Image (cartoon, rainbow, N blue to C red):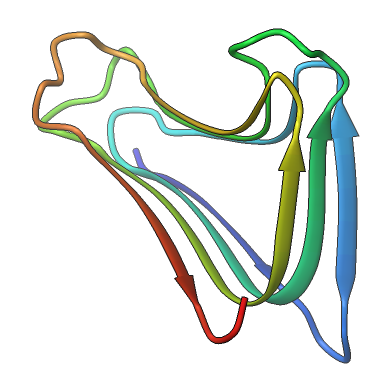
Length: 109
């Protein structure tokens, strides 16, 4: 199935997350994976400085079927991501040659 995480802020809301490997990690089952940030200030970090570990990690599973779509949308607010990789998109199956990734920034981010 699809996996989606939406973070919405109110009254200048903020969120700070950190982890050993990833700050925010969204992984799908057989479908698409998305992270949406709306009007929130988000800081996501990985304490690892190695490539492959990221502040924000969006991944499709190795079981994904029919060209999964991976997306990160930031609408208003801000996103600061750090680690080995700040932001990482990972297509879990090498057979998904039709997979797409997108990063959308809007509303004075």
